[in-house]
Length: 382
Image (tube, rainbow, N blue to C red; front, side):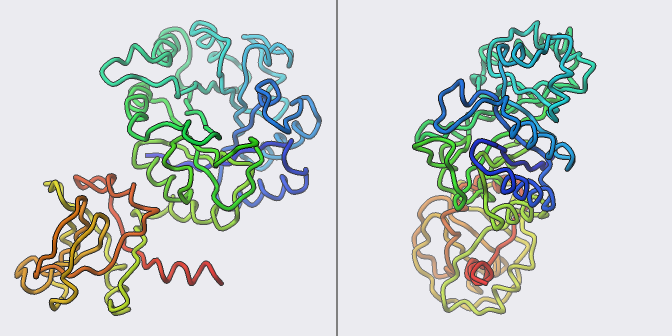
């Protein structure tokens, strides 16, 4: 599975020097994709300007020189404004743009034709024309993929879900799956957006984070990113005008990690040594998935005397103690509320910001590590 990272570039909202510094920082951290839009003024976004302003081309060319792949949101009218035709996209490439995200105004046959262009420009389809489960033909992306497969060049095609800056307008994570499955059957890469929690977000007057999935709107971008990767998304971009250095670095670290880091808020009685021992394990939930629990057997045999055998709410981190005999040391995370058990110690809670990731662990789906949230907080404060 690919794990590609990207940012968004909006020259109308950041001074040229600040935007240049932001893109350079992102590139140093391993971000390779850039999204931009040539439609914001047309769509009446507050503060937007004409993309014909020289600041826009300067920003795109700067990204291109850094080796970052710029994709621009366009429509048929914009293509004409730039002097392009379906057979000649050279004016777009001269601006430093490598991909065209086609939101409207071009039918499947036109897109198939454009995908054969000789100017090194790839086409990005709007994946938010969602496929209905059991009815792949109902999504408008399906006939486009079929047309390109027959009469175009699928190697020049990707897809990207929309971002949604207004609260409660985002998609449900599960609704992405059928579209992802369809695109991957055609070997087409799919992107989506996450929101910055700490950076400025003037993209829209009422902006509440610029993301694809509604439940990610107030979630740290690294955990939203991890869920998207677990769903099968290939590339994740920050949708907001700017993310902070901490957020970019956290995304970069997690994207390279060999397992999903689950932040644990430990009870004060849990010894530091036990926290360190648990952090050293790469865990995998059992393939014979219980209805009630995430179970990781790798930690079995860690000595555990009975202590704090209280109720087990959803998201608790628990460990089987010696009363559990051969299961002693097994780590578990309840998926439903469970009562107390004298054979189970309650060590703490998975931090709520990462609860959505629990579904990705089921059926041995994704490996994970237990990270001390308190230690992470200490690192962030220095």
